[in-house]
Amino acid sequence: MRNNIAGGLVIFMVVLTCLLMLDDISNEKDQVVIKETADIEQIENQKDLAIVENEE
Image 1: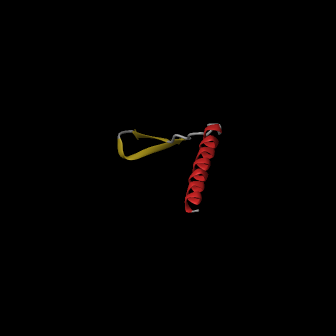
Image 2 (image 1 turned 90 degrees about the vertical axis):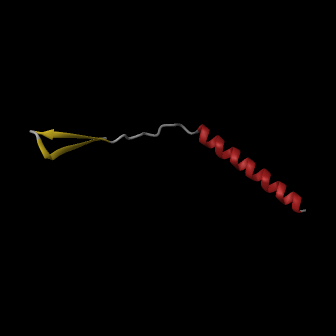
Image 3 (image 1 turned 30 degrees about the vertical axis):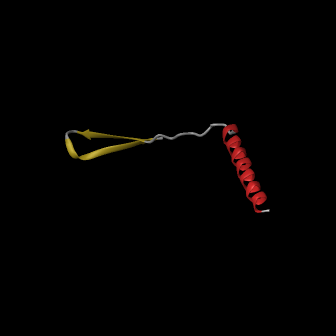
């Protein structure tokens, strides 16, 4: 009796894993990746002043 329960659980986990993998494969990859960059510039040779521009 215990062998049947253990075997059933193994089969259930394998089927569940396969279904999750198929779901991940079938989803479209329309995810937008946002890359943030920062530019730092010196203005008029002043070392203590910087402009930071973020691009999205």
